[in-house]
Amino acid sequence: MTSDAPSPETVSANDQNRAEFSARCDAVEEAYEFMLAYAAQGLAGEEGSQSGGQIRPFLQKCDAALAGLPDVLGRCATPSAAYEAFVGVVEADVRRARAAVQLVLAQPSIGSQLVDNLNASLHLRTVLTDLFLLDDVLTVRSRPR
Image (cartoon, rainbow, N blue to C red; front, side, top):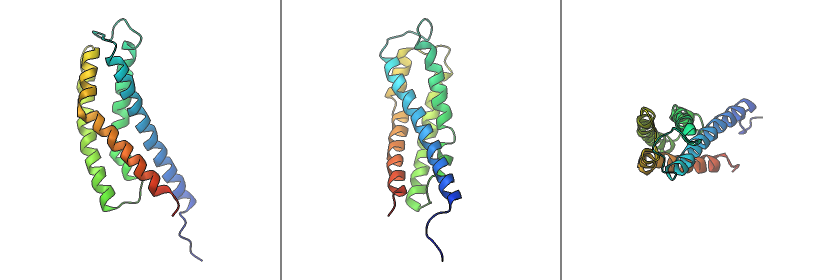
């Protein structure tokens, strides 16, 4: 007797891939939310404030979460032409967002205005929107039919 149910190994791998995707999404979203608050503080630089000492680690965590994200997405679902095409879009968006984040990280001091401009750039917001869309798609795909 054959079954259409996935093997326990496949389910476990799918769960691990979804967990990794979720953790990366959370890191990007947390960084973005921190950046919004940081930008509103009007700080000239990182020095002299508690949140100033946190901006670099948040940006580094965001950059690390974005790195390899398309590979994780490739492991999260059964491939389809539409899914693979959108993962290609995400890959381009991630590349742009990482370039912007890395540009900010390369500065000797990160002030509120610099972070506000990063927040205003469409690159990071586009990736967030991509991730929200994919999370919904993956949730729909994981439901029993």
